[in-house]
Image: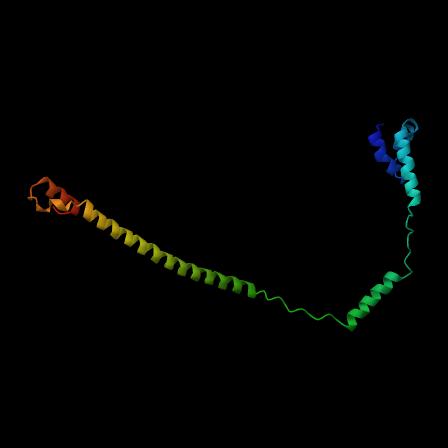
Length: 160
């Protein structure tokens, strides 16, 4: 038997819970190994210095007397009854919460939609102004009808 295994079994041996074959194997190892023998002697001296608590016996009929006392107190002063659970309150609360969330999300969506739409229309008007000033090529306005500049200007503005 190895020392690590023997050291684990020394405590079980001292408690008297070791099987007979393992006990004999441990005793054989303790005869050979000084370190494990010293470990066993140290643990056994430790167990003798520690007082093992005595088992306390309950007085006769203690359990019965306690049970009777509890029953007696139940009849004398009953605990106040708790209010019945309001099971119908939860679905109403959830429903109201959903309605409030829907209302708030509608208001938020409407507000954000107006902001985005106004920004978009402002951007489109700015783009239209830039388009009209730069790509329309107003310089070609004085050119005759059949000229290339006039045809280009008509194509851009959608005239035929």
